[in-house]
Image (cartoon, rainbow over all chains, first blue to last red; front, top):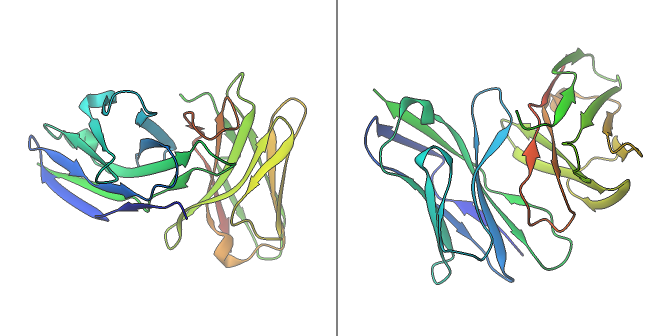
Amino acid sequence: AQSVTQLDSHVSVSEGTPVLLRCNYSSSYSPSLFWYVQHPNKGLQLLLKYTSAATLVKGINGFEAEFKKSETSFHLTKPSAHMSDAAEYFCVVSYTSGTYKYIFGTGTRLKVLA
Amino acid sequence: DSGVTQTPKHLITATGQRVTLRCSPRSGDLSVYWYQQSLDQGLQFLIQYYNGEERAKGNILERFSAQQFPDLHSELNLSSLELGDSALYFCASSVGHANTGELFFGEGSRLTVL
């Protein structure tokens, strides 16, 4: 069965330091992978997506993610955290075969310390 | 602004009651997805419609039903409400049905059941 695992439920970083949010997925077919961000009391917003083009994907607000097939990972990174990055982040996988729904990870809450 | 509109934003009702949540997808999007987000269960996929037809079903209770109308707006009906139905309900839309494109989320309808 398809699944996605976000390895950390909470991550705390200091402002100006790098961010790493980890995501692993199970793979039966070629996946499409996404990262979404949710600020408090808001809907989810797409940060970036991978759909079998370049393995290093650049998104909005300085975020990027690297698709590593050998490790079945799609970790989200940012070189320097900003206070406004504090939010919940969701890794999402979908598959091109069958009529599968989007599968959401359980989320990682990012806290940015001043 | 994602272009997805959800109403109402907030709803407070009593156990045993019935409510209807409404979603207008982004212009041109044919697929509508409904999700439930609660603290204890995270983000749960409920159901997907594509161009008026049910496309995929997730963890949707029998007390819940949905439909998509010819103008592509969708309604989620929740009946015989229980305290545990209190949650944030999101609607999302996408262009196609193949689950590979970006999902655009509304800001959600917060349901409180007292």
